[in-house]
Structures are given as C-alpha cells and as structure tokens.
Length: 249
Image (cartoon, helix red, strand yellow):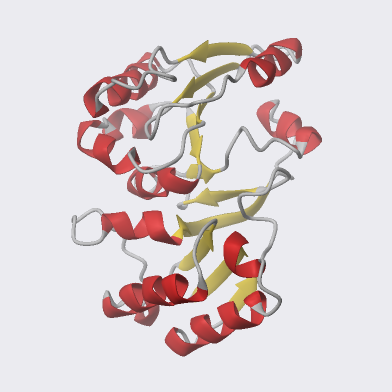
C-alpha cells in the first residue's frame, strides 16, 4: 500500500464539531494523518493558522493537505501564506467554500482543489483519488472560482486571478436571488464577464430550494454573461459532492 500522508487544518473558522469519525476512517484505510493544533482553537490568530500551512508545505512530506473549515476568516490568513512554498511542494491542497479566496491565490502558482473533505459521500471516488488510482472525483479541471461570495473577497486586493480566456466556476450555499444577482453585478462591474471564455454554474443551495430557483439562476447569469454557460450540480455543498481542480498545470 502507498505510504500516503494527509494533513488536516483550518485557515478559516475553528471547528465546532469533532472530526474523530473522519480521522478514524482515514486511518483505518491506511493513511497517515496529521492534525493542526489550532483546528478547534477559538483564539488562534491568522498568523498561527497560516504557520501550520507554511510548515507543512516547507516540510514537503504531505501528499495532501485538506482545509476542513469554513465560515468567514480564510482571507485573514492570506497575507501570511507562503505561496512559493506551496508552488514548490509536492502537496495537493484542497478546501471549500470560504477557502475559495485562498485557493484562487494559490492556484495561480500551482493547481489547488475545490473540495470539502468532510463531505465525503463519494467514498470510492475519494479513496481512488487519494491512492492515485484514478481521478473520477475531479469532475471539473482547469477552472477558476468557487464560492461566489468568497471569491469576491479578493476584489481590489491585487490577488484576484486574471480570468482572461479562463473558465469561471461559481456556486453558493446561502443566498436569495437578490443576493446572487448582487454578486453577479459585482463581478460584471469588475469586468470579469468580458474576459472569461465560459461559465460553469454549480449548485446554489438556498436558491435551488425555490421551485423556480434554477430558472432564476439562469436568468441572472444570462443577464450579465452572454457566452457559453454549463450547469454542473455535482459541485456544491452537498455531502456527496464531487471536486474541481482550480488552475492549470
């Protein structure tokens, strides 16, 4: 069996529920697991959380590092991240939702993966990917973006990715049609929709709870973007979600 090492950390909010079952399952499958000391720490600073990421990248012994957090705080760690260490490391970094802002900073240097390890309903596909047997878990490749609200955290920072002739992937957990339209309008005012070559829309969870949610999402999207639009419900906050690779090799 491959000797695969996995790190688990949080660059966003501290966890409020234990991950024991997930860690036990991964260890039972033969993986070596390391856990950040700040995973549940309500007082950990952005610099402290980023230091774990940096140390693991510089050690260059991890095959995968998964951020299992979410919430609001991921962007506070960006100034402290050693992006060059990530570029040089063999490690694949994955995160989801609030981590969108971090992923889009990193993936300019080396691809990163939009995936929440806690939502591991696709266990066979996940295990096959971790063991490097196949990449069936990765249903979108070479895209940018992720959670629309959290991508917009990079606006005006100088770290927003250059999306010229790129494919933009967007999804959202929360957000009424009004909020989603506001986010699309912001991207339009930034000139994003005049640059991209295609748009992929994942699952917009709250919006899709409405009977006409999908129709409303398409109406909003086509109001601001006239190019090719694809829909992929496999990317979202659901427990059996698939993953997307951000950035190009």
